Length: 175
Image 1: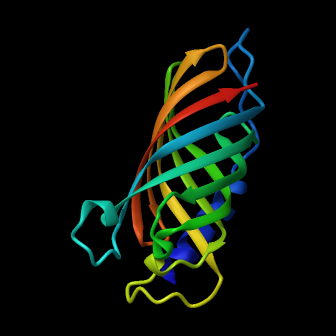
Image 2 (image 1 turned 120 degrees about the vertical axis):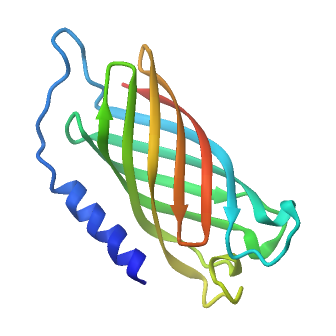
């Protein structure tokens, strides 16, 4: 429960950052970003030693708006693609980003999110689901490389719901 409070506090602080900052002279800053993410998550509550159970494929779609040069706020849809019912997760997050380091080509961000999703058994240490929906939270580091023309590639490392650590490759487009 403490991590939910910390993630929520992070969202509040992120949204309270000053809405300032401008693109470099002659350079247009993207107002909107759409990012497709795909990767795997290590399910820390999995009691199976089989890699097929411990590592689960994930797909995400993120839509962000720039609040400033250093902050982003948006929504993300997320799913765990699994044949095992107890591992299937689908839901959405309110997500935010704050720049940790921002250069012309490379940037590092702190990402946080809170949302709702399915309450699959894998979210719980005892593997017993408590209902249909659960409060979700995430926190992690997002690395981005700008390729030009609004296109970016990236890597996300996230802790999700204190039950998974995920690594995802990203392809983004800003406009």
